[in-house]
Length: 146
Image (cartoon, rainbow, N blue to C red; front, side, top):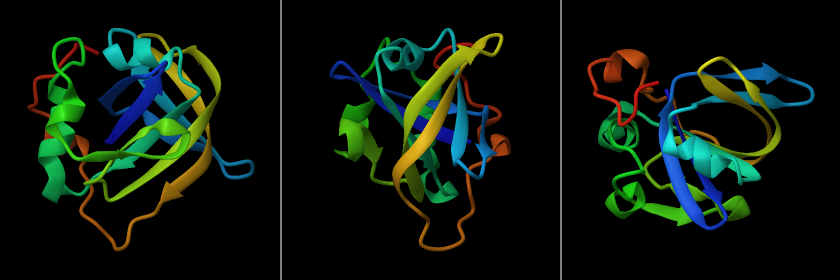
C-alpha cells in the first residue's frame, strides 16, 4: 500500500493507493492508479508531479488518515506531520521511504486513472521495515468508494 500526495495549483491532496507498481527499470518508471471518485485525482489533474510514500506498520495511523478520510471533507495535512519537498509536494514525515515522480502520461484504467511517473528525487528506507500491506487496512472504511 502506498500513500500518494500531490500539489495542483496550490491545493494539497493525498490518498491511500493499492494499485501501483514499478513498470520499467531503464528508463525508471512507476505507475500509480488513482480512483476516478477520489479528491486526489481531481487535484492531480493539474499537477506535474506526485509523491509516493511507503510506511511501516508503526505509522499505520497516517496510512488510515489518508485512506479513511476524503479531502472533500477534511484537510488531512492539518492532522499529520509533513514538509514541502521537490516540486513543492507535501512529503509525509513519518514515511519510511518516498519518491517524487514527474507525471509523463495519464490514461484510463477502468475505474482508475493511471499516472506514469519518472522518479526525480526520493529518500530510500534506512532499514528493512514491516511495510503496510492490504491486510493491514482491509477492514478500513474508505473515504471514497474505489
